Amino acid sequence: MSGSEKINAVVTNIVKLNDLVTRFEFKRTDGGLFPTFSGGAHTVIELKDGDITRRNPYSLMSDPMKQDGYSISVRRDDEGRGGSLFLHTNVNVGDNVVLSHPVNLFSLDLRAKKHLMIAGGIGITPFLAQIKQLDRSHGNWELHYSARNHSLGTYVDDLEATHPNDVNIYYDDEKNFIDISKLLDGQPLGTHLYICGPKGMIDWVVSEADKLGWPSEVVHYEEFLAPKPGKPFQVKLSVSDKLINVGENESLLEAIEREGVDAPYLCRGGACGQCETSVIEADGEFIHRDHWLEDEDKLSRKKIMPCVSRFDGKTLVLDR
Amino acid sequence: MSTFEFPESIKSRPTYGKLENRKGHSYFFIADAEGAEAIIELADVDKSLMAKSHVIYIPKKTGEKYIKKLNNLDINQLYIGPSYSAAQYRITQTFEQSHMGLQVCLTGTEGLIGEALRDAMAAGIPHTCIQTEHRGSVSRRMQCVHCKGITEDVILDPFVCDHCGLNLFVRDHYSRRLAAFQAVCIDAEDPGNIPDSVELYK
Image 1 (cartoon, each protein chain N blue to C red):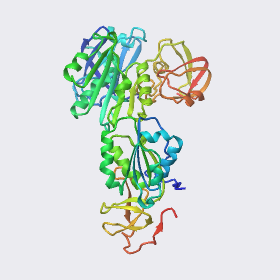
Image 2: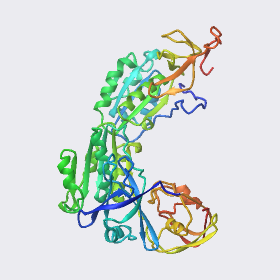
Image 3: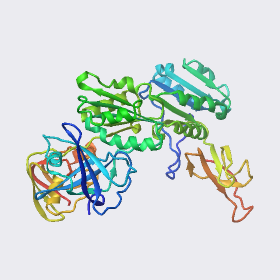
Image 4: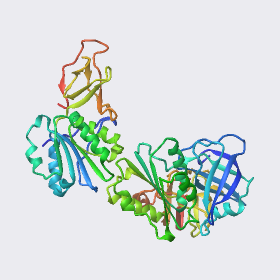
């Protein structure tokens, strides 16, 4: 079986937080306890949408030590492939879902003297769990959270009420922006930096930190890519001896799974490296979209990450 | 030249690089003996670095050899002291008051690099982003695994523990936490059967 272990769960509560974001709460179907996790971990939620199985990763935002329920907060994306939209429109209280055991690709480095967190929009979710974890261990942290406006500032009011001295909020519509170079300059030695938000924000903060001489070892970020739609293409799976078609709105990994071939995965967002697949033959152009492969791997035309990457050309044969 | 190419060994054995000019608003050098040469060479590459540098230097047996040269580098803050322990309070204070963007550079003997690395790690700096360059003696800071005592500047193998008097075998097994190589009794099975001591890497 691919991915981490699965847990059957039921939706116990759905809370609309604002125009875009809704919280989904789950309990185990068997009445048991969920495993504890570490702040920053995500779960892959598996949903039946007619004939297709949707598998989407979301950061767990509940207290990592709370075992009687998990929560995720999902931002509706009207332009994407419909995963978040499906959750928002088709999932109801009482529905059965399958959750994966938590996997953490964005964990706190507990050797840090201070944790400096930068969140943009829905990128707040992993920090909610990390803050709960650090509160328990009396950790030293500070959050800078930027949102479009107050109504889209998910959990802003909770955060400001519970941690008035550690939380700093910035609203775009008030022309209030994080002054990142000023913020980074003067942080005490031993500070680690964590960033979760849109790609542009991550790139900007990472490059400012680099300019100021912050070592890459203390700069952590999480950017989950949703697989983008693209031109349909055909793939031959040599081990399972199957010729499959990848549709416009599904990823290569999803097409492989649809055909009943068990393929490894964890994050489904181009970050973890688990689904790396060897290419046996290729005549055409690779559309690499992951953060995992090195540039030389991409140039070698010998590897592909089927969770987010695609292919445009005549023949693609994979060792799967 | 004060450099030495250590032969390849087990994973636990520390390896060293060459100090280089990296991005950062200030530099903190901790050096002993011939480590002064590494600082002087880096200053040759970019003299302006010295204006934003704090240097802790322990001359050990080199005495006055590098002092004049160091004094001529226009280092922002230069401390010259008799031993690492004498400088340790100053070092930990500096770490406590420093900000991110500080570049830490350690150079000289393995014992000095190890102790300064331990204190830098305790200040929250990941060990992989601390620059190190070995210079000078290949003597080691050894811990006796039996009595836990530390013997500094060990150059002979086997050697006698300063604390418990056991005859100890010099190993490459290293502890970053203790900043010391681990030495074990060489004649435990057959007391008195001790090979002649040889100088390390000779």
